[in-house]
Image (cartoon, rainbow, N blue to C red; front, side):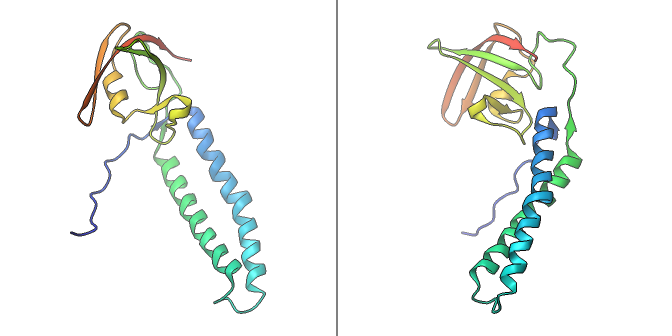
Length: 165
């Protein structure tokens, strides 16, 4: 059995203004703050002599590679993303950027916001537009029933609130 893994499907290239600001802030921090500090530490470690057994030098070079990889990713991703600044005309339906309140069959309510794949965070209630839950919710209105199948389990929810902030 080989190590081949099929490439992941392309994610939707949209983002909220808050998500874009967060990614730009991370890029700015890495490029203007963290990278210069690590570069300085690597040059100081290199000045100590034998680099082959110098742990600070080896670790610093590894950190620089990781920082550069992340900077390249963020730069390319920010160029490809489309920032959605406006809310839809029909705010009675669920679209990108909506805050949704749903209730399951046991009466437990949950609140989610549909965001881009680069900014999902379940702790904050942000779900990716590419997730099964968001796909089931898109286009629905108040009091609609949705069914989400995850693996072998099928869950039913009712939309109890839609809000655009």
